[in-house]
Amino acid sequence: MQRNALSRRSVLSFAGACAIAGAGATAVDGAQADGTSRESFTIRKGTAEETTVYVTSADVDGPTVVVIGGVHGNEVAGYTATGSIADWEIGAGTLVTIPKANAAAVENGTRTADDGVDLNRQFLEGREPETDLARALWSVVVEYDPDVVIDLHESTGIYANDPVDGVGQAIFHSDGEAAAAAADAAEYVTRNYIDDQALAFQTGPFSSPDNDPRGLLVHKAARDLGADAFLAETLSTGVPLETRVQWHSAIVERLLTDDLRLEAADANSGADESESDDSADESESDDSADESESDDSADESESDDGADESESGDSADESESDDGADESESDDGANENETDDSADENESAEDETAADAPVASITACPRNFIGSALESGQTVQLDASGSEARGGEIVRYEWDVGQTAQFDKTGETITVTVGTNVRDTIVLRVTTADGATDTDSITLSTN
Image (cartoon, rainbow, N blue to C red):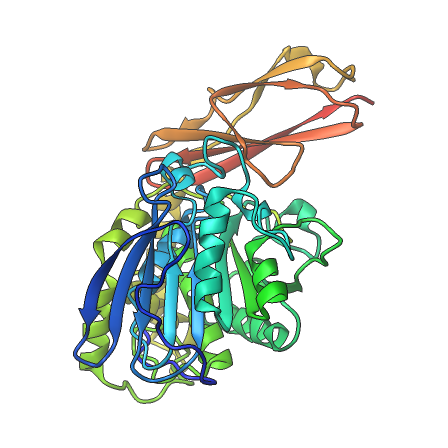
């Protein structure tokens, strides 16, 4: 998905190779024929946290937008979409993208890096961020002083006005005009990209500074810098990676289209055909599509499935996007044969997906505890070796102990000490090499 115009109020224009704390050498890609310049530089250079910041600047004044992915390394759709967004074309303003904000965690495929520190809890408002990486990232944000900040995440559960069960399929937003923009984006993406209304996107406000979760980057951007800030979360389980990436990209596109008056959507944007202008500029659309297929984005899309942002995370194949729009929005009542063929293809695809999906399974030792009460302090071993990968291989076992929405334990087996809570629920998520996931859960009771 490409954009070829970006305009709103006039703000800071591109500042070039700025002196950002912790940044490494700047790699200059130079100006494009249309006057757009592309730059990139590294932060935390020479460390395991080294990552690249991409800056696209048009020669027309416009808003500054920062899009971030990979704050949690196992939330694959977020950093894959951000990698593609880095290649978008703009007609005005500045687009700053950080696809792999937490590069060490992305490399490990885990929520946090080896230090176990949740990067998205290090940005407390009104004070300096807590870690070197958080400070380096924040320096980038401060340097560009964005009008809009969008952070892309994933969650294992669907948001239902209570973050306890998950925050997937939701767009969280700062105060003011951001609320209406989030609602519009949620409605737009649901209408154009989602058939199952159980997966419809919801919206919710950021938590207050006095309530958990605290220390989120978007909270700090909104409250310390006055930016319109959004945190988008897709459901990481039971949905193909390419679909989740498409949702993220469509959300970002819509936020920029409405709130920033992004113009001239190309034919590959996946927008509602009835709303779009006549297939404008096919040649520009094709050129844009070529540019979006960067090697970095391709590499990122091969990563394993992701997890969730505990608050409240598009660029799918163009033909899939267009086909999806045609099927859902067609008004001319295609003939019965076409309908039957389409149904058969869908059923076949669903059967194939089901056949390839993994099946998570938890076995507890001692086995006889189920149905009986445990004592506080008792140790239970949970074994995931009974999980199966139909037509594939399980490459990752992750555990969320206590339904914290954080899969911060890994391994085929884990040992759990029963706490003082009356009931503790442990969720297992298994991921195959192609990114398919499944979950299972077990509850330990001291009743």
